[in-house]
Image (cartoon, rainbow, N blue to C red):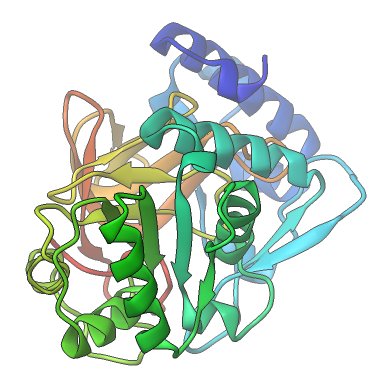
Length: 320
């Protein structure tokens, strides 16, 4: 079963256990981690019993299932220390995941003008976010789609023209660049989705999400600020269409681990965020992140902060 075809919790749980068995047998780093915990697939009957690999392993090891030919390497954007590396064998798996997920949440990407305000990501190589947005720009049927660095006046003029003709537009940007823009320009957007990807990248003081969204809503003249939750180590993203409540695609699930006992994992509650991303078929689908959050009974979740002493990273560092 391809992960993007998953529709029910039963399908998800069945596939997750299958992927766990496969990665246990074919991913030497993950197998060693499971062995240290004395966990074997024969001991596991539900997803909360699966070991979750600390995401830091992507900094120090080649986390690979099998021995595939590597087509590209995505790297993280930490402001210090060694970056994470996600070795990718099949880019089409990533493309199918993010295309299907976007369409399920927002409709056909071809209907939108896609504007990427991602200066910090564009100034380096290996960004999975830039790869995704570049693909959206190419899939868009509008010639105005493109990336923006520091040409704020040009972006303002284009947004104004698109609004005047009622064109559906997605403006996706890193938080500090969106804030820089609204400190210079005031808008009243009716046909544009503004989506922040989190993180000040060391350019500005971190803000709690509610304060960030308040400033952006005022500056862009819109009622909602959307958010994207993703990271180098994942092939899938969660989207929030307002209020910092993130929803996963059917092939991705967020669980919570006890901050005092990381081996205690629950379906709902508050704690460290563990992620199952079944699109991560050739790396590791079961990751313990350094984010803190709350998962609700409906499956939606919030990101409430990060563990102390974590690296500054590019994936939604703000608290709610």
